[in-house]
Image (cartoon, rainbow, N blue to C red; front, side, top):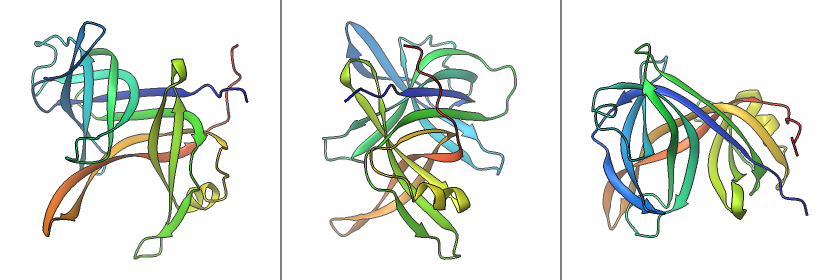
Length: 205
């Protein structure tokens, strides 16, 4: 079967919320992780984890407003601490922001890797949970949880496993509580809020 080419592009504008800390080394390059606060129009914030190669300390100073472009990445956390699925943003470009307002735009294209789950909020609003596999080069993929609302949720609920999907949305964070060994622990989950479904682009190959 022909491999489906993924699409993964995110543009963010927000504020560095903490000093970058060493995350890992790959091919001799040190990668650092930093929390990044992106305000929403509603007045709340999304706090996302940005990963950058050898970031300039002056550019990435806490409190600095940045515009960044990159890709959303995921990996399985096998440490037993925190969420099982870790979602970050791999930064490809970063520059000082020209204005201090939030921006959060994401385009993804991939394939559904499990059956969509449709549910309702206590107030009766329809929600659909999706898991999108977005292929990377060299046979790897990122598995990204997505959520759609209202009439869009009803449409997404009819999609088939393995079906191709291209969407526009934003990457958001939310906190939830989980009972572990009899104690309530606060965790942070990351998901893609689906705003629109997009037509597939022609494959340039």
